[in-house]
Amino acid sequence: MNIEIIKDILNQIKSEEIYNVDILDDEEPQFSDYRYNSYPLKNDNVKKFIHSNKDSRICYIDGGNIDLISSPSFYLGLVRVYFNMFRNNKVITPNVISQKYEFYVLGKSLGKDRDINFTFKLFPFVNDNRINTNEVDLTFDSKDPSISNQNFRAQLNSVCGIARRFLEWKVSEVIIDEELDKGDILVRDGSLQTAIKGESDFSKRAYAAADKKEVTFCGVAKSSRLYTNKGRSLSYAIRLIGNKSYPNDMWYYHPIVDINYLDHNAEMYFVKFHPSSRYVFRFEIQKNRVKILGEEGIKEVLGLIASNSMDLRFPGYPFGLVDADYIARVRNDEKETHTALFRSLCDDEKIIKFINENTSVEDAHGVLDSLQGI
Image 1 (cartoon, rainbow, N blue to C red):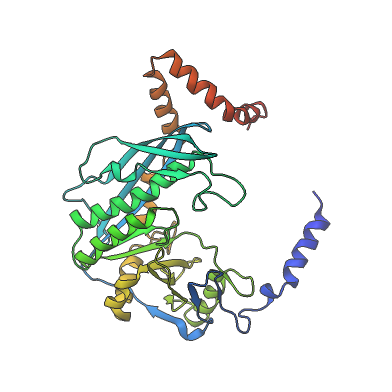
Image 2 (cartoon, one colour):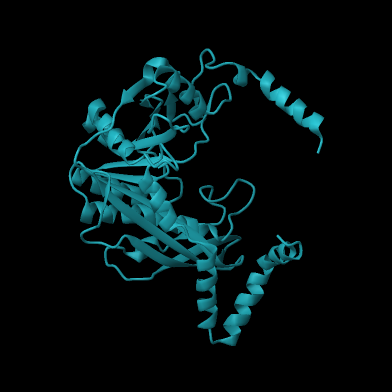
């Protein structure tokens, strides 16, 4: 270990302007997309809020997925979507629908002209006529920029993540239709931006259900890759401003940016949900709802979420999202169980041979890892 090199690195960090200065002159959020018009960072954009005791339900939703069998031409994955509900910071049980939805995702590659398409089909563990799986049996160009990068085609296992995103929106729509009422809140893990071809079709239906029921649809992002025009983390810069104004309180920062993008129907905030939290989270609310709620209504929504963000293990992050992540996450032991079940029920030697020969293409890396004890 070269201690002197490490010291040089630390000295380099200390010499950087972004390390030495709290807020740089003329600093503002940086968005490369012309549909995002940012506002300069200002102390006046920080507002304090307090806990709310309004008798509304809050629903939190998250999804998880994992590869079971993966090859360049054949794929099997598992998606799980889960939600919970709270009232007065106490867990409540849904009246009508199940809290957990699970699906196998079967994907395959198809040659088309001089290119490759990916297609997938969903197989629900339990049939529910509220979830029309035919809505999400889709085909994608493997070089579609919404699922690939500019230089390389996507991998077939990307269909599982696509299915998960679509299902999170669809289940949100069902929750609003069947379980929520006027004044209630639905919080999804992540932002409200839709990025994949066809995803906005599902978000629009979920938003329409929320508009009809007068439900507030919002999202909390665990991480943010947004920057200022000086190259700093936007969340870090906003945290400096907010904590300088209200070091011992909960606060939110707004406005940040005008979003004029149909695939991102949201108003963006950064929020500190607990006075002692080290984290400031990107928080978004469906744009139409913001106009209806007004500033006091927004503070009420934030106050209700903050009342659910007091877990000492992670103060400032909603416990409902912690729970949703824990239940929705698909673990490796489950992967082994489902994979073993699938293979044990396969009694056709030709299919077994086909699966083994296709998956061996991607298994070689795992063999090397096992040789190295990884």
